[in-house]
Figure 1 (cartoon, rainbow, N blue to C red):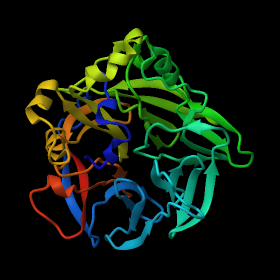
Figure 2: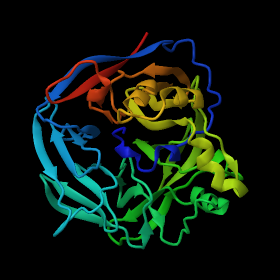
Figure 3: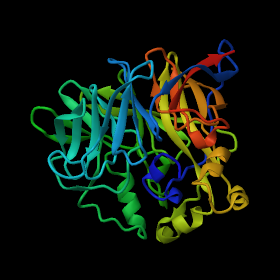
Length: 384
């Protein structure tokens, strides 16, 4: 299975809408881009770990296994700084790790029903509680916690009052209208929905689109939001404690495999209709220098899935046929390139370091050669 954790939900839960247009590049912009390996790090650890996050202040990387119950912190030379395995019972137990990342330099884990636990050198140093009953139906591939002023921002879990019914169109309508990101006052604990989808989003219509998985990136006073299941992302500007919708950016992706939405009255048919293929996913938005980088998998058509047959290798053959690509945008959101390939053996791209390098972990089963330990590739975006 892929190492995005067998992936929060069954693979057919992850679906995507067909992409549209983009602005023409200006005459002065580079016309061709590539992601070139400029260096690699070897980590002396026997076992599978995927790169999840980067702490720019301490210049250290965070890796974890596919169930998020064990993690490594390593420095810029690949030296292991910390190796911790969460306890699943007793004091400070992590019973169900559903997201992992750095928050203000601390390794932070989403640990329902408690909230977010923070660790330094394997020792719990704090927590952010969610002060209302909630339910969790998926993992978060990118924890995305950040703070601004006296507010902490994090993905908002579904309230306990949301009646989950996969066969009712009204459930999906309510789901798409929930706040996506919540802010919490560090002094009072008061919470408020800080980011919602705009009313003009294709998800807000009268059809069922599956389960959105929010992935977002902060860039100064901007917030860039992907819902995973669309070839587009949403741009917000920070105004006070809120993020105000500014625009939608369509990502032009050749050969994108769209999912098939269904009418609200046919919600029970959605997954049966779409499990025949693997729709594309927009899995991240990264910032490197003067560029925004939308990371995606184009998906696999029904014909391709039939040719591959049932997986007998943990899904590696499907991953090889559905690798990671990048679409490149300037800071004015002009699309400059699409289908810029990552190395075929790279895991899901998650990290940009202080040098503007995209750092990816190597998936051993996707590579032609074996290595001792874990390998991280440093990639540089090159425009020609």
